[in-house]
Image 1 (cartoon, each protein chain N blue to C red):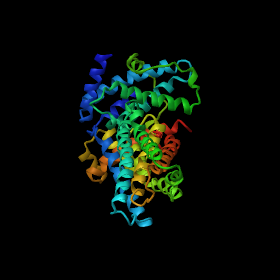
Image 2 (cartoon, helix red, strand yellow):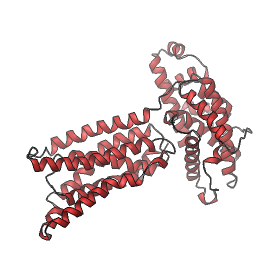
Image 3 (cartoon, one colour):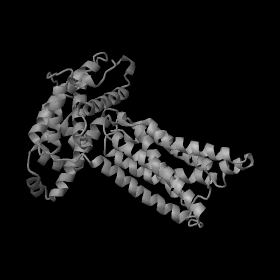
Image 4 (cartoon, rainbow over the protein chains, first blue to last red):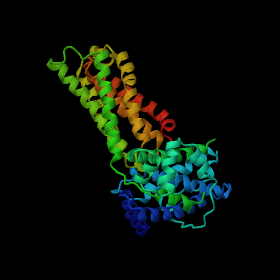
Length: 185
Length: 213
């Protein structure tokens, strides 16, 4: 546990500074821990397997758009656990699953299962992007999907560089909110 | 969608972020809210005319200290509650301490006063104005602090809403203290304490609806 905490914390701290490699690494590991955690929590509710992956992806996106709330002076695992549990309880409330069937857990649980057996989620990125404003959609496509630099994306979209950054930022927040809200309807 | 694809998308062209944004947003929104609350109070009610007399000044300072302690503790707590899991760092004993001190001061001053003065000391003259103005004038600071919290990630939404309400109630009470001419410790403990607690309860009720993410 302490070794995992140390590694994750180091990777996350580097990610806050903009280190893409560290970030990809930590997100890959988080997705395996989150999958293991949600599978073990949802085992009794017997919902479709894509529900676990939906929750994993919703939580990863929440981690991303709220990463500025991680304080590098504090341990990382409790921060991740709090988000994972918040999203789990939110999911259970939305789907009206009784909390009584849920095993009690604590912070140790979050990195207890390393599960790489991924199934596809029911989320469709293209459909989600369609629901954003055209500028947000364009900014995310160029910068996050096509991998253009902010300067290149700005030139192609005919926007200023700061407008591209703002639209990527707002667009990612909107995607996160869409997924959280989409479940409730 | 495959999770690996999502991870790739999220991490592409990663922007650096500042982890000190939580306290910054909270303090700025509370500061702006306080400026609006002070301006509204001065325009609509005005500052008490005897402000510079010694007795009045003393009580303005006592009321401001009480409200200031509430504001300080609430904002410090909000900077913790704004981060996932941060609610475990909130001390309830510290949070209740300003109310405790006010109650002790009220009891002592009642014990020293003749029984015939008690009613005037407790009920005062403008308790209704205090009860109405403090929650009303807390609305703008409350909205500001809630806006800040929505940019952050509280995981206990009831506590986050209650603490935002409490901070806003404290700010509003701080402004009202410049107008209020009810100068007694029991009045402060009862009416200031009660209205701030009311703001906290209302904030706690609406918190989960306003702060969900």
